[in-house]
Image (cartoon, rainbow, N blue to C red):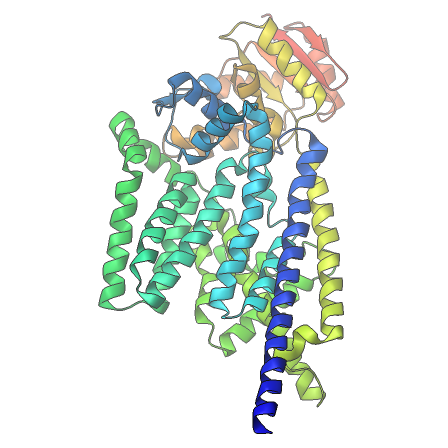
Length: 524
């Protein structure tokens, strides 16, 4: 009789495990599919890479001209910009373009969302380890996949490097965590490989990867063996990435790297930036803001100190890209809040409330979860739709083609769009790459040209875009020492006063006009 009861209990246990496994696969699958849609739809609707990526197009083409040898300079904007940017994305994009005979623009348009979609799976693997639960890992990946705006910088044209940095950062943290937990040599090799790929993908990804590894050692290491492993990882990364940074130093010394380190400006205090990210309402209903706050409180109570620290530390290390990194631990803490904190509070009020172990079988829990994810999917789609407008339109491409075919190769251009933030103005970034001409209005690349130059020129360009007359642009030219032969004006964005000023100024002759773009040649 006892043997029969044991067999029945074993079958029930196996059935429970199977159901939990199926629930995990279903949720992880929904997270991936919904995340895939939100990452691909904006690029599909835009018909052109979103926002930035112009400099990366030139750097991919430079590899074609050099026969895959690391160039000394990039041809972008004809400024002799050191080819110091981590080159993995350019080599990967160049290789895909050559192997599949695809255009560089197609690669820049589609490779970023592909790579960032893989990051959803990486978040699942990492969360399942940290939370010691595959169902919680699937829940965390769902919250990450459907956080409105979490993927925006990774699916743009500039995501060619940023998406790779994000993916390899996650895989690096996973490998190093497993190494410190188990001490197995196989994780030592994967840690070196993934950390090296993160460094070779994006400057800020390398910084945040190193910072996360330091946190991992503080929370899960602190032994002689783990210290030895950390030294081996650091040495291995230096050796593996030496062909890149060694060439840059041989060509240019340390100046480009020092310049890049001094190109950031964050505008507001770190804690204010962190608070705005935590409480930011990417959606109309503050679902994620509530889950983040509750997750931080619950995580502190449950002694998930690493996740709490990782949710803050990126802002102390490198605030500019910190929000993108902080989304990873916050998604895990949100999963804890949704699956543990709120059910626990409910159990205090209601005796027959479901336990944490039975939540995946509870129809009300699943119904609420499905409604939340559906709502976040809609909000993510709407957020992505806004990105569609931040891309070049056919009229812009027609104008760049005309410039490339009808103006001298050494001509300089002033592009007026009325957008005061040069880093989110796709027209001025793509103009040098598509026309192969020098554009005075472009700030991209200045971060490698000397300490302090980026922020100074950024300020100058922001002032330029506020001009309301041709005389204002002339004054700007004299004050900055920048001369130009042509003015390209986005007619649909700038003021009527500016358009009228150029039309009436005898120093300029109109040489091109369409509904959205007007080009003047400076004749005096």
